[in-house]
Image 1 (cartoon, helix red, strand yellow):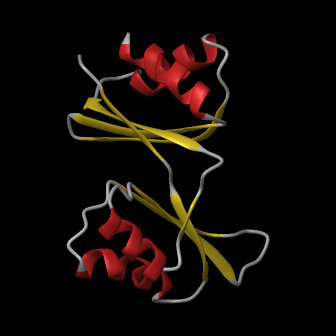
Image 2 (image 1 turned 90 degrees about the vertical axis):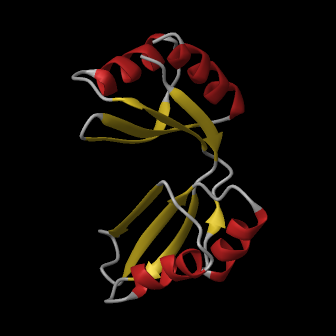
Length: 140
């Protein structure tokens, strides 16, 4: 099985925890016809009045304009790898184990399988760790 791996940064915004704010964060992308691979949102437990939204990828200038319009900023202290491929039992474990055996610490992880497909986002401390992880994952 061949994995497709791309690299980049998440974009994040703190939002009010109330109806409609998550949708408002996505609106500029929708109006501009931008397709997003990963969108996450949650309520912050420490402050019930605030939430967060994260988006990936913001790959071109048009996307950056949308992100800024939505109040998102690039998270440059975490380098992300997006891994796509055919899903199978144990794939997330195999990837996490390979990364850990290479001595690389994960700062962020989201993995999901949809039917026969797999999509994961792993975040790393720096470019060097992300590159090393990419090399390890390409061998799976």
